[in-house]
Length: 234
Image 1 (cartoon, rainbow, N blue to C red):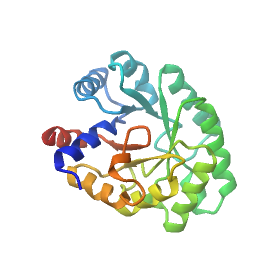
Image 2 (tube, helix red, strand yellow):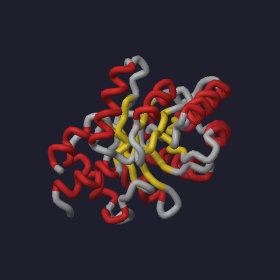
Image 3 (cartoon, helix red, strand yellow):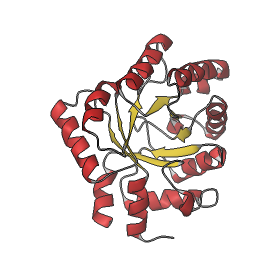
């Protein structure tokens, strides 16, 4: 396995550096973007309300993802969720992160899960969509089924969690990697704060995803506090 500095480099190159506080001030967004520009990640991830300002400040070469569709909620008025996604795109988002209806998933309402995902992914147009499974709320079978449904609906990435109801684990990472295979990417999000956390998750997916294949087009880590550890180890 790679050294800590090599892990840190992979983590930064594949990082979705995150600010998902709806009440963040313009000054806080400015400071967040300034830090991203100084330590360029694969992408930043913000709420739709902060996309326009973030876009105006963000350096070239860094993608802008938006957690939309009434994030972090898994359901709600589908028209409002669609409008939220479309608003984020109109403000300048390159990628969209949306939450799968895990309540419907747990209740066996696969048709509802599919209908919602199809609508949200269609609203994103050509933008890649990362589907958040909220794996901490699902049992193993539900998680595997959620991966299958998300991929069949057109997800570009399978994402573990919002970080609001629990985080990612090495086992979850392994399940996502095996499900995505060669057809999609994965985003590990929730609880990854140290280089050792990253190492543990990379080791879990090593059989399906050799470390040499962990590139930003197919692998992301969603985190807000991990950047400190990355900088310390580069």
